[in-house]
Length: 254
Figure (cartoon, helix red, strand yellow):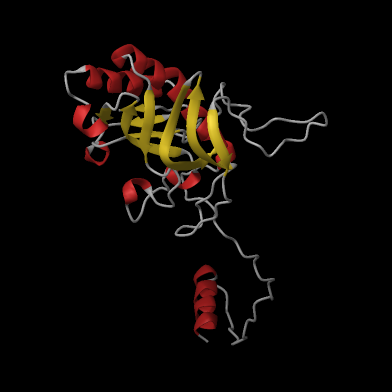
């Protein structure tokens, strides 16, 4: 009756001069089909993997085709020591997933072999960019500065199903898509260790090396965060190839 009364009042308001009779008629809404279940896969503001920026040097990484144009599943990256990764589906957050997951164990450049203490789980696309940075920027910089090649790169695991800076809310981290890695230290063949946290601002060869490879990373990744960015990154370099800006061309280098 409340609905009917409201309808009558609305009708009377529009027809002040006309006599009006209201009847208490129960209105039964038409039956509607049940809406199909919808699951939001990615947080608002976070692009799905196909919308990530395409790097000219990485366009074909992991996407070889046979004579019929059918793509191979293998991820082929020159100089990368890798193996297929396990399929990743969201555990803590449903949005977490990796397109073409791989486990990167290290890189090879000529006679130099660089290893990670533990495999880095990332996407094939990201593994390609990371491998090129290590081979073309990090290794030459170490040879130039120390006359000794890099033997070990100490990093985080790559994939982590979490939000940015481990905050409980906000946008999904690129780590959750296999598009990022954190690197904290380098060890040379001669045993020398270079720490991002300890050596970044040191007026030594170590500091010069870190700043050189940081600058090189800014030419390859869309986000490079180091000790000058904020306290959360005082101990490591955060590298990712996430999409920033409406057309994925905005770069962050700090």
